[in-house]
Length: 245
Image (cartoon, rainbow, N blue to C red):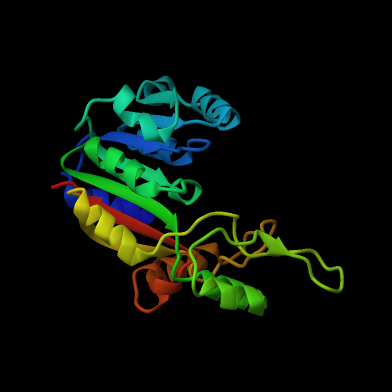
């Protein structure tokens, strides 16, 4: 996903330009710190107390020049208008957040308002068109049948009859369909510019699976699949990039 984001940023902004980045739902700050290391000015927003504490601890270990580029705000991403003026950012990230929001459209609209004209909105969402694929690959046939007709919360895991450890089917989160988000982005003057799949081949890997020796090859395969039809359509996650008009 970082490669996909960098592709969109370098294709839209002049090389070397220091961008104003807003990362809403930044978690522990991995993406925010990565972009700060590249020279951008980053504001990270996170509501969870433990996560923002972890982000602050990570930031404290960075050199002073990088620390100066990062501002952390503990807040709900739905109240960006309280903290920032419209048009204050060149890039707005919202990765892995919409899946926890029952009504995502107001949040997305608020994020788009934070963008300057020509700014980039990056969303990472659970793919509502692929829920049956994830359950089916795990052998949960009833779950696969149920997933065809819903984007509602899906089970986190199921227990094997023979007592084996539960099979991971994905987080207990809501999903979004590509067509619906495309319409939403068009309606808020930040129409879809590009989209990718994320975790096409690796979504069913165990959380504690060892990092493979051929990691570079794995990433190359995932990156190729994430931009290629029909593979990207069945990815576990969708990465959508809209551009503010």
